[in-house]
Structures are given as C-alpha cells and as structure tokens.
Length: 70
Image 1 (cartoon, helix red, strand yellow):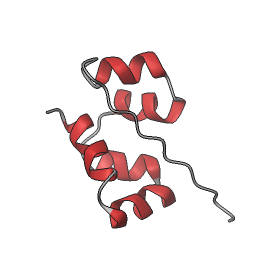
Image 2: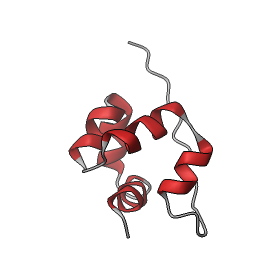
Image 3: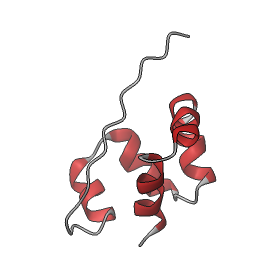
C-alpha cells in the first residue's frame, strides 16, 4: 500500500492525527510522507488525480469537513 493510501487509512482511524490534520492539513500530509503532487491533489479536491494516486482500484473515499473559527 502506498504512503498516500496508508495516510488516509490512518486518518480515518486516528483521532489525534485527524485533529492535527484539521489544524494544518498540508503540514500533516507532508510530515506523513506525502509528496507535493499528492498534497496539491488533496488540497485542490481533484477527483481524477486522487483516484489515480490511490491506485484506481476500489478507492475508498474520505471526506474531512471542519470549520475553523479562527
């Protein structure tokens, strides 16, 4: 499994990581080994690129929604 897929699997099950992600998505993705292209695909919401990066086979989709009141 790629680091990309591993990260999002972990994000879905690790509450601490999710809280960190909510505060700094880009920084957390980079700290977990995602490369610049992967980070930009996530930040842009490019569905076709996300599907390609995930391996296009039985993709699991995760939607992270939060409101930052800062």
